Image 1 (cartoon, rainbow, N blue to C red):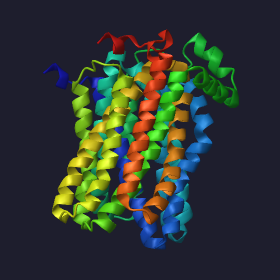
Image 2: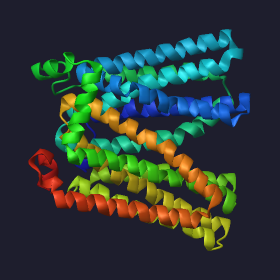
Image 3: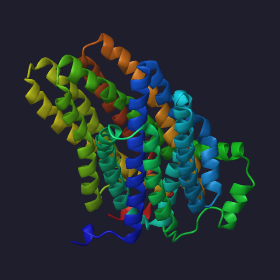
Length: 428
């Protein structure tokens, strides 16, 4: 019964996560729809989609430096204030010059990407200061669940609101969500030292330039083989997962001829799986090393990939295919939670506090860069090859990759090294 009781600190974090994800999700949906309707161009839509990743790439060294050097609460508050001012500015500028909507929207996307990068990285790096080590798994799991719920609701509510208000009014609505998050951030309790508050951080952080700070992060990864493997693995999962992002919609709509409603049901099932997976993981006490848990679930993901292509050759009815993919996507979403949450919790516990900003910033950028590469490669493959062989070979490749990483870890005994030991995780 105690497991269901949430601390005030956890509730505050979940409010920040939900309002941020839900509000920005609704706005992103509205921006994409607006650009598509006004331009009628896939290229116009594509430019708006790649703007965010390009901004993230450019920002990587700066985000890490600032998060590792300055007070986390102040960074998050400044990010929220800047976001609100950016939305306010866009709303008024759009009303004055509606014909210039495209550069105005691209400018807004850039501002939101910058502030989201700072807020997201700072929040991730702050969890070890906000919660005790043995609470991190539960907090990360609930975080994942609430994000999935917000991601699921955002396009549904966004589509409804889009029919009622203009795009500038959408921006003003989003300010309300940002203010809620801002107020909640102000009430977070940092029970542990925060960056720039200890002599060690002042010595290593404030005397370094941005480039020196960035190089120190790379040096840490070069010397910390386990952490390097985890980041490479996260990037590889994103690459392989591109096969599902590209191939499943193509298979369901083009090959299996599911209706829009049926396809929508299968797509929603993924968010439901992540929500349920997060709730389940928050109630469990892991009895094995979190990295072993993550990699076993990556192996399961490879079988999900293989199973995705099977209906292509079975000749099932559209109703049966819909039920099959609803079940598969619920399982898929749950498995992703069991991959990401133990791994991210372990990294939060292992990476020194004064280096978390640059390492998590590097991690997210590397992972983000491989996603477009995977999308291009698998997009080409699905245009020229049947779905089943592509999913089969991709699943086998992911399985071989997973076994190779586990074998390498075992041979080098990386999980047993003293510098890779996290007390609470190994106890039971």
